[in-house]
Amino acid sequence: MGQKLMCCSTSIVQGLKPVMMMVVVQASYVGMNISYKLVAEVGMNFTILVAYRNMFSAALMLPLALIFERKRPKLTLSILFQGFISGLLGSTMAQNFYIESLGLTSATYTIAFNNLIPVITFLIALCFRMERLALGTHAGRAKVVGTLVCIGGTMIFTFYKGQEIVIWSTDINLLRKYSHKNSHFLHRNTRTQLLGSFLALCSTISFALWLIFQTKMTKDYPCQYSSTALMSIMASIQSTAFALCKERDWSQWKLGWDIKLFTALYSGVVTTGLVLTLTACCVRMRGPLFVSIFNPLGLLLVALAATLLLDEKLHLGSILGGALIVCGLYMVLWSKSKELKTMTQQPPPPPPPPPLEESHSIDVAKSLVSGDTCDEIS
Image 1 (cartoon, helix red, strand yellow):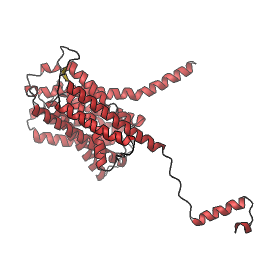
Image 2 (image 1 turned 135 degrees about the horizontal axis):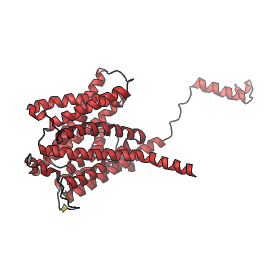
Image 3 (image 1 turned 30 degrees about the vertical axis):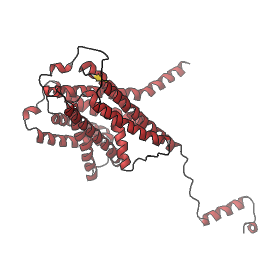
């Protein structure tokens, strides 16, 4: 009895392990968004922050690749070019667009657009004929309806504010310490809100394109740590070159023992190193669909943390838009799970019929085994 109870508890812990890892992943994004917002109020150049983030990520992933993937395929020009494109889409463009949007809007507002990544990925895959609509099935119709619901929720989240919703009130406001240094972000209007929405959408599209491109790179170079290290190295070169072109004041590149250094280290080591490793483990254990389901949890955690620590206000439009985005997302994920289940349950195709001569010889052998005479066979 005790052995059965121990086995049962062990299986429960093993089943909860990927869930706990994904909760850690989403909680890590909360820390990144809060620190990003503080750095935005301090006035640090965003392009320099992205450059430092990719540098710290490359410094972490390169030794891991050398230690854990010693027997890896040789790097060819094709793989190097794929790493260059992967770094450009997944790190340089996506991160720069994201942090610029965060500075113009809010942490809750910007991360809400991340829930559109599965939908935009589906639309891009549809354009490249990697996905099909299948409107004749329930899953196909749910996929289309879920996509439209996500788009509608984004429109409400962007253009409708509504009544302010007060859940709780605290005296904690980490931005109060830095508000006098960068008051530019405190005076937002419709123009900055729309610009922030456009940049957040660009970040989402860049990351969705990276997911599509990563499918090919994974097949050509199936080395997790090495491919991530290559992407980080390429992204650090790209983002550093872009930052040098945009900001030539060397005083902006100095990192002291302050929020700037903490944000650069945290975003590079934790949200790129730790998060990437845990996400890869969860994909291997439960599949990519399981990982995608936890995206709305990040929106909820960031919204709660922002109202507690940054004194951000929730509005009716944000709640309605976020709810529609989550509902549409789960409709798309449900349709994908149904399609995957249908594909796995389909019987294998029947083997092709044998050639005529081979078929005749098989019939002759069967007749001989059954005791037929040569005259009967002929």
